[in-house]
Length: 331
Ligand code: P6P
Image 1: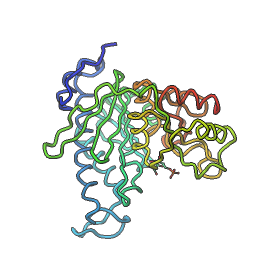
Image 2: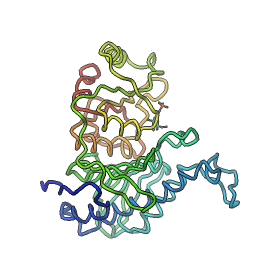
Image 3: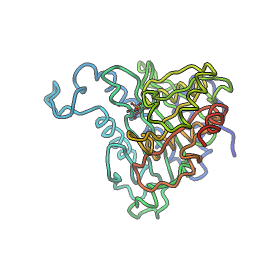
Image 4: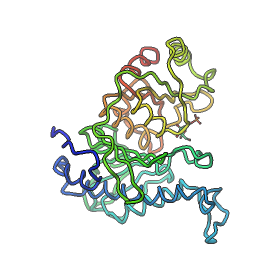
């Protein structure tokens, strides 16, 4: 495997993609263009998110904004922005989106790639100004180039088939973090220049780090194994942090070291809450590339064979030490 070229901090995303162009054996520039399309959509969506509090987009769908347009929830805006950028970019034949029950066909049947995405996860956090995020996984299509894509073959692929996985975190700063299988790199957006700059090269989970992140309000609903693990965390004196926004909770785990769990929660989310294709698989790819682990239902998340596009799975993800320790309780 070609090692990711190291580039100086401050390299722009565009330059970085060019530098690492030859990593993509399968692509003749298409994946590079697709990554650029994602960067563009992130910039556009970030601008709308940062203005959301100004009343032109927040609020429930159905009301009118100052332009007299139908007001939309930001997650629908996120879906529209990403689908538009991806259709314009022409690199994907179809899109699995959290916002659409059906597979979104782009009409570009000669495109090589499939993208599974949650355009704006945690959008309920917008009104309380908590960070939110976009999550995406990119796959090669399995059906013939030139034919219409098919859900079973193109959308329902295991996480191990991903050729890229990433997220955009709209937080105190906007960051794009992604992997193409050669390590994880983080780019921070400078809105005054409209550029993403390499700020976090070769991201790895710190070996030490003891932050556990779970919604403990469900404690009495969890199975005994989860309860025993949580009691262990308290006895060990671990730190508890839970933002309630997946990308923010994951990003903190990656930077500070830690574990995020959304287990099967009987009576609430019996199969877990998070979606396999466009939340768990992309983050699992990043976690493993950063020296961490990601499990669900006792197996490696990326080995789970999807049965439907929006299926939920339990998620235990984070640093190797903490996930292995948790799996001793939760196997
Ligand atoms: P709970 C947000 O709605 C979300 O999908 C993730 O971003 C977040 O991690 C999770 O749900 C929070 O769920 O049940 O703890 O509110």
